[in-house]
Length: 383
Image 1 (cartoon, rainbow, N blue to C red):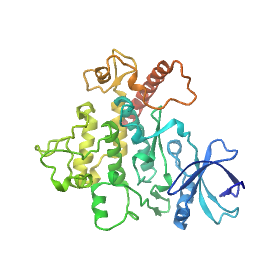
Image 2 (image 1 turned 60 degrees about the horizontal axis):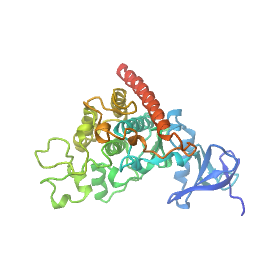
Image 3 (image 1 turned 90 degrees about the vertical axis):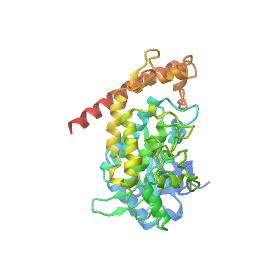
Image 4 (image 1 turned 30 degrees about the vertical axis):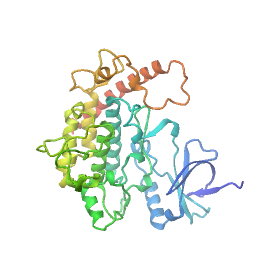
């Protein structure tokens, strides 16, 4: 088979290796001889002049290490020819996908990690979104399949070429992407009016999507406006009308709305987090500018994580400080370590002693995250 050769923007040849994945927008390949990077070869429909300029702008405005380590941000454009005239895609960091799950795989089912771990994941997600916003960019297509999580609760944003990019010269490359569950009510109305997302600024949309993702992460995948009760008329039978009608059932609705029976008790969620949910989904429903920012989520979650209690019965268990007893022990008093066997084991991890090893690792993770959270919170209070 003839080698597939592309060229980076310096004219250096890159030989494609094994295909790592493919989708509607293109395919990802290893690079022969490269230990870290890979290339995303875009579908022909995505190889536009505007997208080429966007990728070059992202490469030229390479963000700080906090974003680069937590995303697949483009590192260099690639071309079909050594003269760099036929744009084809870009180079990005290569992830070992055996170590990661998409976010939606983390929040549901019997394999879901305990609440304390999910609070750490939420903190890390809010922190990386805050970093993107502080660099004056937007994510746009912020949704569960574009967020990866590993066993250490680290978060990575993927499909970064769909971000909304603001250049130093003031030029904006819009995202134009998004799906219903993570679009705020004002954009659902906008789309219902026959408009598109092609030139829509997405800051307020990011704040809404972040709140939805954190809600789903902490509430076992339940969507914030899912509700029952006498206020749910036939016109509100599907989810989008619930969003536009603000059927959030976790505040006083005068008996009109109630949480679905399959939803966990929101009382398990720390009160400061509940308050931000209400701000995002009730106050922010008609006033997008009042939605909590990613930095506010980060600071709130840092305080919550820093205050997690150590279970007196099991040193691995952590639980929110507002609860009087460990919910993990209440759920499974005879199986103290079962709740942490959630993420797939690392491929190189030996089969013997797995539970004991995982217990120690998780204890170290929580200790480290509590220390980091305390530092973040201390710094935020000094600003």
